[in-house]
Length: 178
Image (cartoon, rainbow, N blue to C red):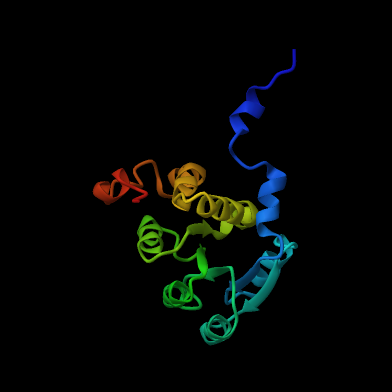
């Protein structure tokens, strides 16, 4: 008798291969003031068509003149929150990427200002998987932050301490909002 427990758990959710197809050919704008980060992210997204910007001005010009499916936005070095506002107007899915703005407050700000995900640069190697989660959730009409909380709770506890949600219990007890 074949074992099907794990397979049954995955029924109704996309297989890894199907999820990979979600990113294939997507146009992604990568914005960071560190050229090593730009190159690394481009390498980590081989199935995507990427553009890179290392300044706010270049990123704004790309967003206003071209069409993108996703924008990966550094927060600090390129005025990421201002770029996030532009992505919202252009209807581009945005994820925030940060090393300097790593705090529960920036997670909340990213969420409330319309980002679809918040990624610490320490976790950048998982970018493909994170973007697949976002696209999969949006395709199903779900909030991508559900998956964020599931994936990043351990990281947040390790980084911010086990009381990281205590700063604003009203927010975190109802997170993510629908």
